[in-house]
View 1 (tube, rainbow, N blue to C red):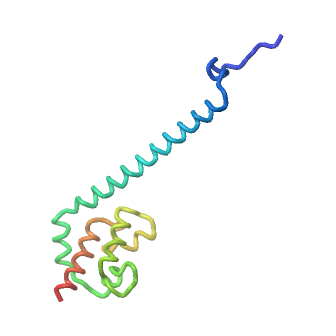
View 2 (cartoon, helix red, strand yellow):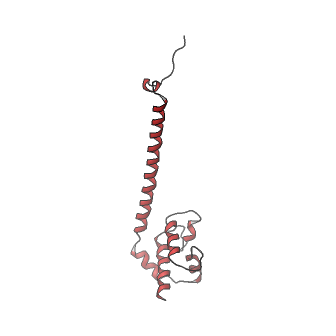
Length: 130
């Protein structure tokens, strides 16, 4: 006589398909909720880093000489103007290290950070004052 080797708990053996589908739905729902929470938390951390721009980094950009090479790199969207659209592009690239985002790396240190934002802000402010 063959021995029953199934090790399922008794309540799983007695479950109907609607109950199984409902449990699968719950698992998928909570997995999606966890992913949404993770993405939201990452966005909050990114925004917090963005807000932590130090005054010393902004002030160090004031002493920077603005040359044609720097102006061409600062025009991030290549519209022949350095304006708020370039700032928006830099905000999207902030703390990213992919090749597309590194186009916003104005001081060419390998990452888009507060120093790059300070340089771009200084360029825009100097253009507005002229």
